[in-house]
Length: 224
Image (tube, rainbow, N blue to C red; front, top):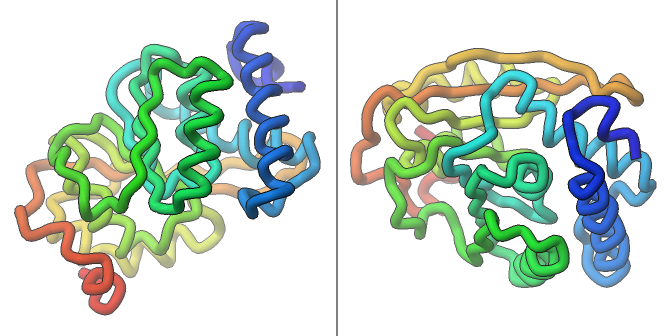
């Protein structure tokens, strides 16, 4: 693994990433967890991509909610790299939840909690320092699903591709209604494939109205 070329990780942490990769490949034979099955691509496009946010944000501690965690990205890599960061993985798919629980158990991730559910059912309003989302809906929908659970002056960290600016334009109204604004946008390249990525970081300035988030069907039918 080349992770230590890019991040300050112990040998024990690298071993956990190797075990995570092996579990991902093993479970992927039964369930569709990822379309990426080459070990080197898993390292770059899942692990390295997940960790690159730490180049721009201090993720060494605090409370982080990973919405729509899927196979655990970016939440699990961040939990491995930052053992003082308390990470909640939120996922509605039961098979993926089973996988995440297996990863937590096999890797001994005591700083991880796995929750089987949907964002609009969460009770922890204004609670998390960070909410992350990778490949989860367009921003005008994601904003309502995530920002009510970010503490005031906390951050929504959205991992995006080439559509980031377009999504941001469509989400202006939603961000305004959710008392939030763009803190910064970072464009970066993955180190090997040179794929382009964008990180949208959004700050919450005061609590959201209690009517948000609405039911998911309402959010999708009529985004803010």
